[in-house]
Structure formats: structure tokens, C-alpha cells
Length: 287
Image (cartoon, rainbow, N blue to C red; front, side):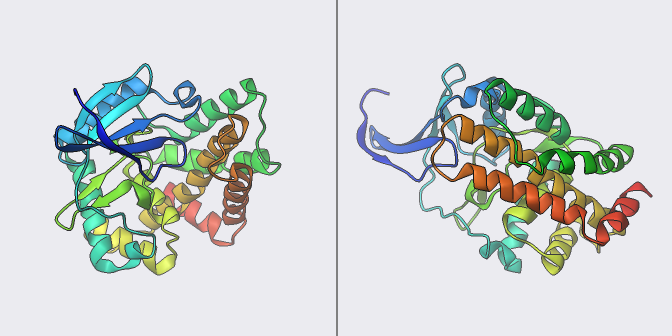
């Protein structure tokens, strides 16, 4: 690229900064990684997975990527909007999002790296301790209680599939004709239900919303084991993002009050495990 024009700051993510710019009449997005993110994110894997996503028609074109620095340039997708959490509760929009997720899961693509949420928790906690940080007070009791979830999920393992992992609404880009998935930093091969749980918890889905999500994804009414798997993974989602958020605190990320974010995630996970239905959902998955 020889000439950059009209550089403007775009809406950034929770950790990175993004800038839109023009070059020779074309628009692009420059992603500049957040402080120290390369210490706990595999940028080599991200580069490969972002290119695989583009090849599958699911991600924007990667024009340039430097895995060492974390800098990435993608082609700007014109006329696209990001749906909000409430938008995803509308059946028509949810159907389009679910179809996009199913395309990813059923494409047969093999991503770089394996995503295991419990090993990810362990890795985040190890990194956090090295940085002199700490987790919220309730995190250790929550993690101990969650070992029953780990056993239930591992005893009913499903074949790994390509997973985006970070299914927050902000990572959907809707052109009206298709939906793109942005931000492949955490992607890897794992349990498809993780992506469904992430979508559910980030869009604030509840009982009827979850049932609709599963019916659309499965193409039939969900079995008790399916509903249970989604419920358990929603708990694990919060447990993964608790130490992640604590890392943001110790690394000086000021985009949010990340300590409150970590505490709220942890408390929500613990509250879900204290609900009367928790044991029922465990048994449903283990059957």
C-alpha cells in the first residue's frame, strides 16, 4: 500500500484499537492489538484462522497480517451494521445468525489450535499470577464447584468442530445479504455448544430464547441433554472470562471497569450453580 488517506478512528473492541483508512480509493480496517495481548493470545493461530474464515466466506479479507506485532489489516465491509443483543431475540435475525454459525460448524474447516475452556481458564490464571494479579474472591469456590461440569462435559464429549469462541454481538457484521464474523483471536477447534452458549449469554437469552436458539440450530426440538449442555456451557463462559477480565485489570486496560466485569461474571456463574436446576442439568448431560 503506497498512500494512506482519511484515517479515522473506528469503534474499538474490548482490548484492541481499530482504525479505518483509505488507500488508492479502497477502504480498510487496521487492527492494533491491545497492551500485552500477545502474551496470552496466539497471534500466529489468529492469522491462520482469520484467513481460513475468509476462505470459508465467513470473515473479512485479510490484506496484511504481522503475527509478531499483532497488526492486521482487513478489507472494510461497506454498508454493514452490528446487531444488538435485543436484535438477536427476533426470530428472523436469530435465524440468520444461527445459519452463519452452522455454516462455520459444518464447513469442515480445521482451525489452528484446540479450544478447551477449562485449560484456557488454567492458562489465564497462570498468566495472571505471573503478572501479580488476582481473581475475584468467589472465583476459587466457583471453579471447585465447576469441576462437576467439567466431568459431565468430558464424559459426553462431542467431535470438535471449528469454533469462533468469541460470539459477542459486536463480532457480527450484517450486510443485509450475509453475516460476517469478526475477531478470530480466540478461535479454535472445540465443542460447537460453546459458540451457542456464548451467543446466548452475551445476548442475555433466557429460557424461551435458549429453546428457540437450540431448535434453530438442531432443526428439531432440543433433547434434555442439549438444553443441559447449553446451560452448563453458559456457566463455563463466565468462568473463562473472569480471569480474562482480571488480566485486563492488571495489564492496565482502561476501556471498562474490568474488575467489576470479572466479579459480575464470577458471581453470575456461582449463582447459576446454586440454582435448583443445576443438578438436573448435570444429570441430563451425563445420561
